[in-house]
Structures are given as structure tokens and as C-alpha cells.
Length: 236
Length: 236
Image (cartoon, chains in turn purple, green):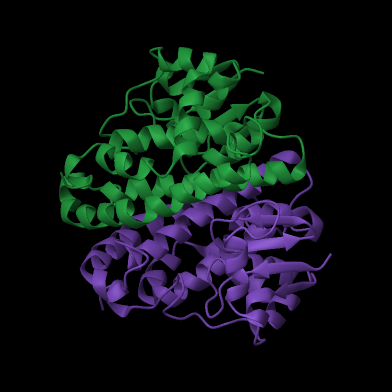
């Protein structure tokens, strides 16, 4: 199966959670918009194909299936790529954890766009300052503390006692937060030893290390979800 | 199977999407916190049980399984309750649509809490006014227009050509929006004939009609996700 991933060019964004799974498994895939431009996405959003109608990227074409929503894509890919446990309870839990990662990712996005995604950051800086402070002081400790507990509960190394797409997504979450909020993450990281160690182990997996070192891995930037605006980080 | 639903008392909230599925199917369930109080939820969040650790309610106990995240619960319940199509592509699409409903529900919540969920609305009224305007002018037309297209694509009556939990969730979304933004929804509703008709049909399903008429259905209120603050609706 040669998967076709559709996601906007120029940013890691939500597509990156899918890319990491495909790369870690050594799967065959095309990153369609990077080859054909973002216009290739529009035709799907306009519904010119048969099957499921996506609301937004990322979406994946797998044979005749069209699958949208990041966590839904990972849930679909997991068994075929060997990135989720075999049993029902493990798969349900993996998906729950992924959905919880999606929730905090959306909150991170809204920390720089608390009023409207279609407005510039410059048009909502005052609101962003308040929201980012709450993210750093309340929401990140809640979510990251939760994932640290999940790791502890899973034996320390993996949320699900074995490697899964959730490990990869937690790596991406921590990498993005380190980029966006370096000062806050130095402060919070002291209480997150298992998450820190997980991130390091994922980055050292041979296929992930090769991917991170390749031109396929784009750099974080201020058009994506994880943006480094120093005024939104912990005060100096 | 007697399901145990865990959700905060006093509001419909995200738990309501699960309740509607259980009620529509005539399933046997206990709404645990309404019997034992919200304290019954805390023990699960503290991890005093075996199995999956929820981040937040709603979660469902089904035998030994603990399942959290609204859309994940509905995905689990769907086949057993006869509330999702049989084939893989239909189930994946149903879940995608449910996750997209979760996204707009989160945006509705943030329209009155754009800075922080833990702060009072009164402490973020200025920000809420800006965000709610964007919700009414941009996001609701995008999301509801999308679901209207999905209905058209599904033959007009159902997103998935047959009744499913997605129909129930779209009913709840429309009911909540009608409560929170009556003026905006009168304006937007003119372009949403299929969504309007779907909502009406769902409300007339015998078990749903009986549920809506029962004390089990709580009223919308200003502690929930869908809140009626007239100053956040279309200007008079």
C-alpha cells in the first residue's frame, strides 16, 4: 500500500503526527502537496472525489479510503504499521491518549490565536498574552502531568507498555513545546522525567533519527502550531 | 451489558452526546455521578482503578473497559447499539464526523472562555466578545456549511445514508447552538435546510422524544458548553 498524505506545505502542523508514524514504520507514502502544491488539497475539500468528505487537512488516501482527522488517521494506520497493541483495550486507550494530545495541541494553537485563526497574531497579541499565561501555568502542567502519570502507569517507558504511535506523538508534542516555550519547558520539565526520557528515546530510533536529519523534516516556524513568540513564554 | 457513564452533574456538557446514543438505543446504563455525586468521578481521575486513565469526563465503564473521550466512547458503542454502519469506510467516516463535531463544540466553549476555562466568564468578557463574533461570522458558517454538504452528499437525510450516532450528535449541536445563539442561528439556519430537518427528525424519534421529555434531560444552562449570553449573539 502506497499511502497518500495530504497536508499544507510549509509547516509541520498536524500532518507531522502522521508523518512520524509513516516514517517510523518505514511505510511507503507520498506527501502529495509537497509534490503538487496546496492546490491538490482543495479538490478534496470541494468534494470532487467519492467517499468521505474531509473538513480540513490532514487527510490520508489509502486505496479507496479517504480518512481525515489526525487521531483517526493514526488509529487506522496503527495496526498495519505495527504501531499499536493487538488487543481491543490497548487500541481504545491508544486512541484516547491520541485524542487527548489533539486537545492540548489545539490549546497550544489557540495560545497564539485566542480570538480567530483567520486573524494575524499581531491582531490578538493582548488576548494571546493572557491565554498563553494560563497555558503555561495551568493547562501544560495538567496535560503533561497527566501524560507523565500515564507513562508511570504503563511501566515507565511507554504509555501502552510497548512502542506505539502515542510515543511518537508525545515526542512531537514535547519537541514543539520545547521550541515554543523554552523557558516554561525548562521549568516544567523537572517534574517530567519519563516524558523527557521518552522524547530522547524516540529521537534516537534509527528511522526517526534519519527522518529528523532529512529535508523531509521541516523546521518549526511561526506559521505552524508551535510558535516561538518570546513574549508568550515565561517572563525572563 | 449495563454501561456506567461518568460525567459531571448539573450540565449536559459533552456527556450528553453519549447519553443521546444510549437513550436512542434503549441501552441499560447508570449515570453514575447523578446517583453518587461528582466525587465518584475523582477516584477514576486519580487512577485508583485498573486500566485506562481518563484525563477528564465523560468516560464510560463497559465491563472491565474504561473508555474516555466523547468520540472514542461513541465509536466504541456504535456497533453494539446499532448506531453506525457495518462497513469499515462508514465507521471511519462516522468517527471523522464525530471528531469534527468535537472540534466545533470546543470552539463554542472557547467563545465564552477564550482565555481560560478556570476563570469566570466575567473575567474574559472583552475577549469573548471578539471570539464569539468570529465564531458567528466565520466558524459556524464553515462548520455548519460543511455538515450541510455532508448531508447532501449522503442523500439528504443522514450523513451516512442511514441513522447513526452522528445524526444524534448533529441534533445536539444544533439544539445547543439554537439555545446559545438564537439570533445568529435564525440567520444561518436559512442556508441549512437539511441540518434543520435532521434535527427535527431526531427530536421525533420515539425514544429521543421520551428522553427529551423526561427529567433525565437537563435544561441547557450557563454552566455548560452552550451558554446563552445575549451580548455574544448577533447584535439586535
